Image (cartoon, rainbow, N blue to C red):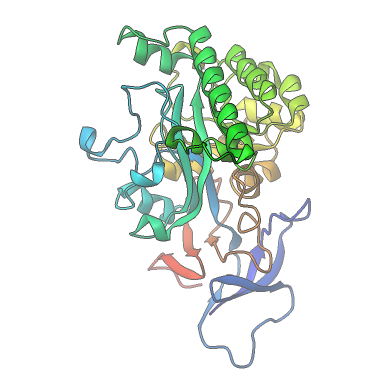
Amino acid sequence: MIYIKNGLLYTMQGKSGIGEKRGNILIKDGKIAAVGEQELLPPDFEGEILNAEDCIVMPGIIEAHCHMGITEEKKGMEGDDCNETVNPVTPYLRAIDAINPMDAAFGEAVRAGITAAMIGPGSSNVVGGQFTFIKTFGRRIDNMVVKAPAAMKVAFGENPKVNYSGQNKMPSTRMAIASMLREELFMAKQYMIQKEKKTDDFQEDYRYECWLPVLKKEIPLKVHAHRADDIYTAIRIAQEYDLDITLDHCTEGHLIAEDISKTGYPVILGPHLASRSKIEIQYASFKTAGIMEKNNILLAITTDHPVSLIQSLPYCAGLAVKAGLSMEEGLRAITINPAKICGVADRMGSIEVGKDADLAIFSGNPMEIFTETFYTIIDGRIVHRRKDVVI
């Protein structure tokens, strides 16, 4: 058991979840057992007491889109398993089979108070494969998984075009990208219809089984799209096939924010702490986040690690605040909002009784550059402790 006392609790619950109210948290069996301003310490308590006076206690930070452990640091080609660049449609690939928890980025994430991440294939393919949502601490990936599959990756725009036009095969145009995705969805839908008929001659097909959670709206299409026209194409196809999607990157989203808002689709914005290295991200700006907020769009902020380093996630939120996002929404964009977008808000993203005890204790606001992470707690276990601090 762990007892956190006298902390400034940012619970991320509703509009009052970021008020600086001093309170206490009791952790038991990996879960949040009690939260309140009153004394919660049971008389038979056996565990560690953390005095968090003058510290901010928050739900652990969540990265909604990255390639940690699948594009490893320090290893070059040997550690790069992000894109299967010989076939433009590979829905049956599973990130869980390529994520290496030994990647140094996991340690950086934990030290930054990042307790969970959505990880999956890159954007070289029209359909890249299945994302996995995991906790950031562990050695065996199977024990870190929260949700798998958690999303199906698809990509529009430059990346598929550049990769396959150089191989002298489709897709080399945006028309081909959209057509290939439609064809795949059409075939998958026909497969689902046939399976539901339960005829004696039906045979399961490995290629299309992976589409069933998408077609049933159990998981979303995770859409890589930067340019406004690509965002519109993604929305068009999603509506044609009645799918849930997340708009990842959404670099030109500020130009079409009203239309995105009408769809109700959430946005995972970024990475903006990186160079504008290609045409379709020429308008990348931290100001986009504030425009998303003004249009009531559910927003998360991403580093797209390793495009921006995973440990910079809270600072990316801070730069968005500097450019016009509200302080409250900046904190939500790295906690409860990504939890909602990734479909795990029943377990994390806010400090509530019954949720996983994934917490971070900071010396101040984590979006400020000099703030230190004193403790990171995952599943009720202290996985990072700043050794020279006594709180």
